[in-house]
Length: 499
Image (cartoon, rainbow, N blue to C red; front, side, top):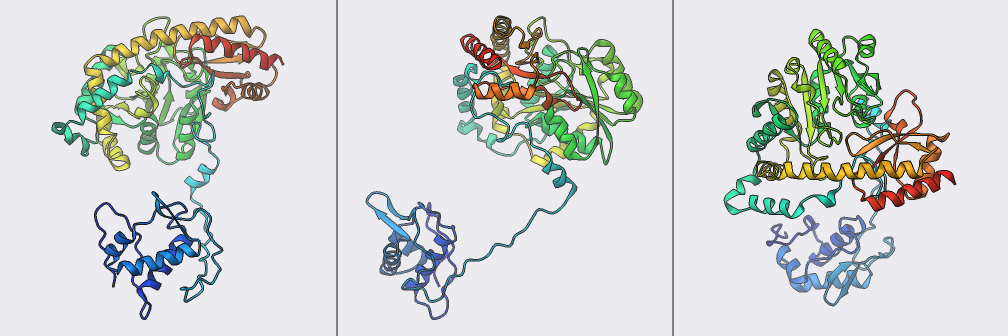
């Protein structure tokens, strides 16, 4: 029986044992042929040398050479000088009666199966994630929103810090880490929140995750069981709405105006809701701030009902008119009811995939256990690099620099809109962020969106953020685009919509 032990650095298909009475040459030939026809050896894949194959299966080299030669002569393999023996790109008809085939190879019919009809899967069929291959543009065309300028990120510095973490004296960083997050990063986040967001919190109250979406998922699982009611901003971030829909909660769409979520309307529709999702520092996508009166009303409602507030603080640092306003979580009455969520994907670059929750003390243990069960822990190497990036002052310098760049581009966007979009698109004052919800002054939102796409301009229709009908609009980004690009794209927008 052939040996199943492979030499180092060589990968071989498990071919099984030869049948009784079959020659080793016939067994090897038939096994390789079935692997090729069945796709286990894809077209173009390289086979081991005859010497390596013989050593691996304890065969005579002449036996392997004979099997290879038969497959070459029938067109299953091809040999080229310098590239070895590979599976042919175009295979012969598998029904041909090859010389060493002792029985007809009958293709196995795969059993047709469908996914079980679970409630989760039924709801999933009706949802297309806002950020997916079907919805994301392939390039970086103006004016797609929700993106920063990755070209302005200090990548050489990040690479240096990354390399430092991979020194032999620090290789423990490659092991599993604390499910709550690296202590050094939690300390850095706590210091940052105290200065930038007015939130005084101990590092032990911070849970590091891969995304805000993951944090909201845990909230829905632990705090809104069954058919609990959950407040959602309308218009609001589609990713949060879709997560609510897939979780099975009863979503309550609370209208938003220029002062943020209409808290009184939420209390009228669902006074006993278990959770409220809000973006109080910069409403997504309209851009307003939750007024002081509504902040107090929201906190009072949560305290009286024993409910929770999920504060998505997604890009509050990029404020141009004045200093960033404090987080809702910074208010004295917020400690026991507000879960503050922040992300570094907006402040650094999307693929860093690091975010955090600031949790009430009584939720910390259960949330940490849930996170550990669902994903073990966030990338510990990236956490260590980010901790150094913050502690050494690079993070603060980067954010301040990007705030100036984005403010300049926001001004260029507004000026270009004023020059070219009169009677087409109304752009409100841009006070913060990386994008803006603009009001269309043409008849059809879908027609405008289609015309702009054909002209090389990417946007997101405002209707995708809404449940209830609002005036036609487009959410347009400006942060990744230099002033010259903004000007040229603004002209293209005008030409497309006037044409």
